[in-house]
Image (spheres, rainbow, N blue to C red):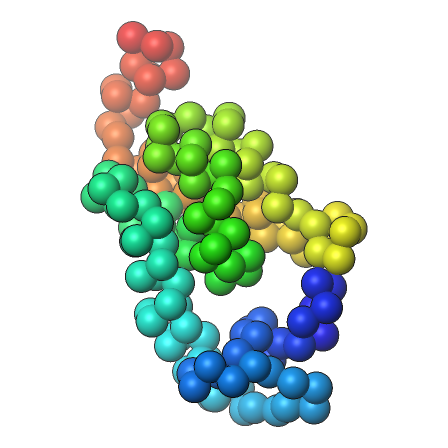
Length: 148
């Protein structure tokens, strides 16, 4: 059971491909866990992130979308859809300070700050940032930083 009180299996799945919820005592092999994760990412979370980003999807690099997919897998696409994180990204994908602050808000499970979620959100933000910064040349980055 995860800190939020839900039964999980494999890499944190709360349900199976057929929609059945994970319950206490369920067991799967590592191969089944890997297959379930791949299926969930390809069939739910990546399409969910694409839908939520809407027209912004085209200007968000793949690594940054991967960070949002990881977030959606962990928190849910509904939570991402209602989040200020998504709003900030759609307003300005380059507003790193505000976007980092929004990632940093999602570190609680069961009402408590969890070190694993702090680490996860840091990694997701770093992946998001790597994707965005990878779009620009050094000259463009300097101009952005200096506000030129």
